Length: 262
View 1 (cartoon, one colour):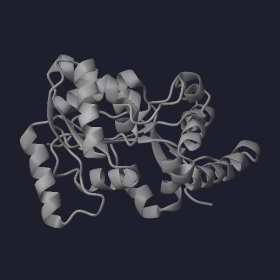
View 2 (tube, one colour; view 1 turned 135 degrees about the vertical axis):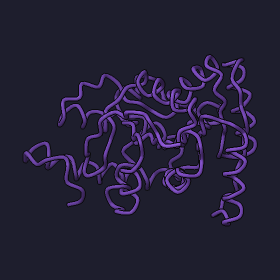
View 3 (tube, one colour; view 1 turned 90 degrees about the horizontal axis):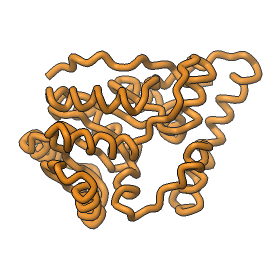
View 4 (cartoon, rainbow, N blue to C red; view 1 turned 135 degrees about the horizontal axis):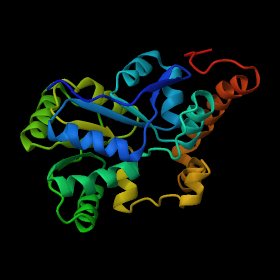
């Protein structure tokens, strides 16, 4: 079903289109879309994903086709406020949005589907969500293999999700894999697909989330780097350096933020 929703305005951040939006607006729009089973794809875009999109034209084109790309990282929100005067008071991160959407889904009778992570994490996630939101309907869940799916496996996944009747599909398979999955299957999955990344681990309790003051200071990446230095070291160091190399000239030389790649 084609979307009838009027999505928040997007602004280019180094050529990547980011939505100027809030938690309240995102939850309201997506619950309505989920009820109508609209084909919608949503990303939560931190600095690491933004930089990957800047340097990969194909990935950038796909991400720019999303219905919403929410400013997950505080630096992304700061860019929107500094260069476009959007006045956003907070970022819109995947973990918090997932919890807010599950609360709304439990109230509104919208079922959800969980796709991603490991079987153990999925079981913990389901338990935590049901304990926190007793009326929540989990229509299905699965942990995909850590390899590319064959074409027949992809068809089966789509059939399972659509057959479940879920209105919200949370994808926790990491970036850019989850964004590519959502983009490739937008026309086939009759639900709102949300790329929530590490939200599975944070909500399930398998990884510790940064304290709120660290999140507010835009240093959640540093907290994650300290807890997973081997896995995330290269990603965050490279990503942050690249982000600064793009941002600093625009702050001090009066360059525009809308250009794609230098």
